[in-house]
Amino acid sequence: MPSDPRQRRAARHAQPAGGPAAPPPRKEPITVDRITDAALQVVATEGYDALTIRRVAAVLGTGPSSLYAHIVNKEDLDDLLVGRICSEVVLPEPDPAAWREQIRDVYGQIRDQYLKYPGVSRAALAAVPTNLATLRVREGLLAILLAGGIAPQRAAWALDALSLYVSAYALEQSLVRQRRKHPDQEWVLGREELIGRFTALPAATFPQTRRHAAELTSGTGHDRFDFTLGLITGSLVADGRTSQSRTADSRSST
Amino acid sequence: MPSDPRQRRAARHAQPAGGPAAPPPRKEPITVDRITDAALQVVATEGYDALTIRRVAAVLGTGPSSLYAHIVNKEDLDDLLVGRICSEVVLPEPDPAAWREQIRDVYGQIRDQYLKYPGVSRAALAAVPTNLATLRVREGLLAILLAGGIAPQRAAWALDALSLYVSAYALEQSLVRQRRKHPDQEWVLGREELIGRFTALPAATFPQTRRHAAELTSGTGHDRFDFTLGLITGSLVADGRTSQSRTADSRSST
DNA sequence: CTAGGAGGCGAACTTAGTTCGTGTCAAGCT
DNA sequence: AGCTTGACACGAACTAAGTTCGCCTCCTAG
Image (cartoon, rainbow over the protein chains, first blue to last red):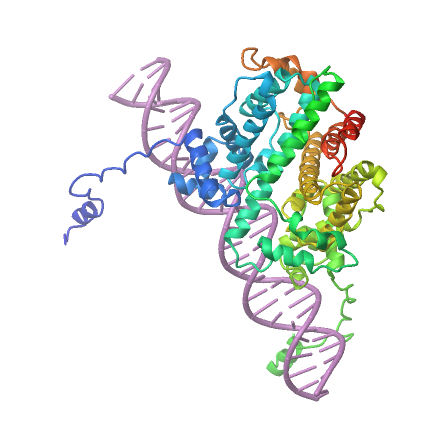
């Protein structure tokens, strides 16, 4: 231990023997794409409710405030998610003879994207209508309906309905699946239990629900989704079609 | 100031001259109904996003923790809201000759309830299927469809679709109206601006969106809602109906 | 009168979105 | 080379919201 004050001060300020420690390696820069990737990973594995700025930052190995150099706020992150999800939807070349199948295919893709990221359709439901990736999908769907001879306004309104429906459907399915993962909650019911519940309802108040408990809880996979798309597309008929053609269409789709 | 320690201690413990102040009047007891009323008031005036336990407690003139003697958690509050909203829906006596009008009427009521409490359909979308008030409405709707001769499973699935749709529709409308209230946000667009946006999109990528911008943004009031309900109920046909009857039904509803 | 339960309530805890201030780095200019 | 400026990264701190815990008061039953 040096006894001279000058030497002691020098020792207090001494550089480490090997010179300054090498600074930690510069991390990969944070970008909007990396943020979006990380957010999608979180939603895919933990559900939309687990999506927090802190969670995304943790995946990126940084702190939450670092993200604000690249995104405006959490809502902006939602917008990015929806955009990325829509960008992965494959749009077919419109075929007038198969427009119904094409509509079902595209909306099936959208549904599956939403289900791949459980709960994210909530963000889709809140999205503003000017996201380019979303508009691309809308353009593709519109082209299919127009190719099928549907009048523009009916086409537009039908797409609106279908898009709202698919979002709500995916949201419901995500919640049901999430509830299945946590059966510790006593009010979470499987189908058998739900039937039991329905049939145990007061007969005076719920005669039909009791009688048809099985049908009310029926359906596997995407039966309900397919049924609804069938209802909606079945009602859509080509502009200027003859009455006879309508009959044929109605029979084939119902 | 007394100098004797005994007197100083007596002064520290002295009762106020007038005896203990009269305790504040006992407040009206907090009940589940009062909580639900307060919550509905908040949602009706400020939207669902403003619904916090603290906000409800403030309306009731108490603190947030006081509510937990009566509700389990915030999700329980959502359940109460949905139940109250459904309890106000008036169910008609099923009429086989007017089942479509009746379905439209009841779903119109539901829609209006959701719109009266902006954003609350989000809670409805997350609700579990065993709320008695919700089941009551479902029972009534099921009875209407069955009276109309619709097969039980189709009836059940159609109700599922319609309920999802009306929730999503109300949610979208609530968001659009909310955005109209805050035009300071630059990305909020009225119809004219939206048309302008659509027509300004790249022609190579968005030919149909540009051409049909007017139709894509058309519709006033609940045109879109009515259109969708028409599509869905138009496709629903009575069980065992003859082919000829189908033709007449299809024409009248499309 | 005493004990116990119900209800009310403040303090405190945890968590999440966001801002602010500071430091570092890279590019451009003199 | 040195200085300036803008972009980026990040920690501390702030605000806000859901909830729990501990304490107090009141009421009812024994």
